[in-house]
Each structure stands twice: as C-alpha cells, then as structure tokens.
Length: 78
Image 1 (tube, rainbow, N blue to C red):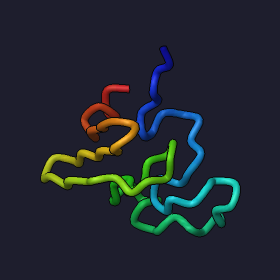
Image 2: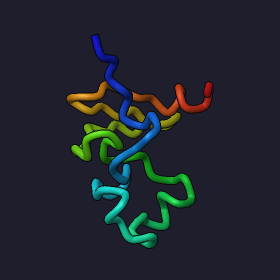
Image 3: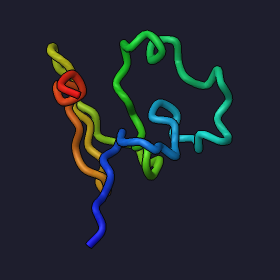
C-alpha cells in the first residue's frame, strides 16, 4: 500500500501558485502577494492540478482531488 503525499508535502514537483513544474518555473513567476504570504496556494505541489480553495476570515482551506485537503490552521501547527 502506498501513501499519498498531501498537496504541500515535500518534495514538491509543481509551483503551488503557478502550476508550472518547478524546474521550468521562472524565479519571478510567484506573484508578489504570494511571496508576502497574503495568497493561498492555488495548485497542488504534487500533480499541478488546480485546487478548490476557500478563503475564510481566519485562513483558507484547499482541496486537491487526488492528494487531499489542507487547511491553513494545520500549517501553523507544524
């Protein structure tokens, strides 16, 4: 049985703000708001698929159809 990595678990293959493979992504491809931590991830870091993202007053939740769900509250606990 293989375990499926979560959308933001390392090692990542795709940019979570662009969906482009990290090897092909330009250094300035990440938007300024994302670099400042103001933007939630929009793409799964494992498969590059667009995630369903819900922004709330206290954070955000993101769901990849293949790699599961991640909540910003969980990131604070790590």
